[in-house]
Length: 371
Ligand SMILES: [Zn+2]
Image (cartoon, rainbow, N blue to C red; front, side, top):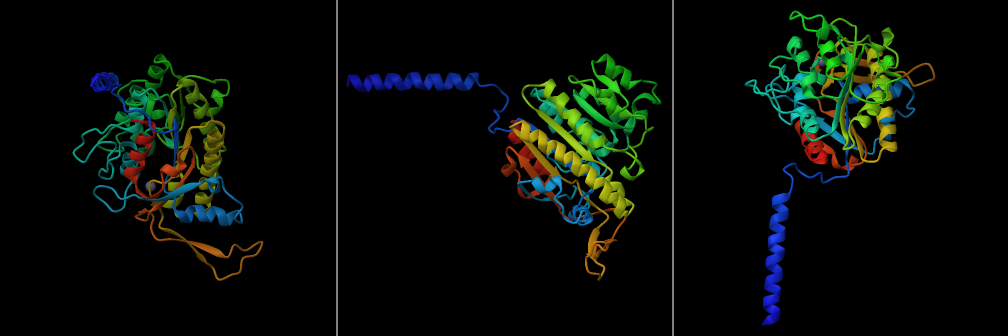
């Protein structure tokens, strides 16, 4: 009897303790994984054919992408179209919801939807975007801004600094300092504590803190690789990772876009596609090396959609040293509906795989970071 009473008292104490522990639990969801850094790498318009063409071009010498240990395929359709545009696709990755083409992290009724970058920022992660297009262009913008139309670049630009983003590297300086409203958003960024420069090389001696690189390309993107862009993208990826690591001990969310693969697709230019995809792959290598050196880092490589309806077919010649044996055909100057490749590397690489919808990519990333 005495023993029974003793046990009841013990269980009461245990229950009380459990309840108070629950009460004291923080509101934020606990991170259930070992993943603390996510690098989301988007090859804009990069289908399986685009990657295959690079492989053929270098006679199947391995790409950095070949180092991936997991992956699958991603369905890309938008809310109102089987063929997505970059705005709706980036919105799916950023928010976990589908929207109509041309909308940027707002729902079809223009209601803003919270992005993974905003959630990560609130939770104390360092955040960033790196692109070869203008910083206000659809893919990077969907992570830090909300707009009812993707080309409302004046409004999008005003949202960069207030998002709390730590690094933003890209083109289109004119969207920030040659504006109709007379504001100089880059001067404002400097006052808010950012290092602001107009070339990635001007950050060579900067090794910590928040930074914005906006190239003086008017309102437009950087030059194509074949017009002499150089190794900006891999360098910008390395610098972003270095700075983000200095900004937070908790971890980071970084989006890196090979933006101009898409332009090669729209132009049905096989040479541009090969050069841009190879450049993107070099940036993938930088991210994978970072993952090797920083346990807890997950690299996700995918595309927002395929561009060009590209196929690689036989030209009825045998492969020789001088003859590739293939020719490239395009079925459109626009985007296509086909699924795009998904590759993963690093900690948690097995947690993002199979045939996934683009919205599910967001859900998995949020779960892994406890957002
Ligand atoms: Zn496009």
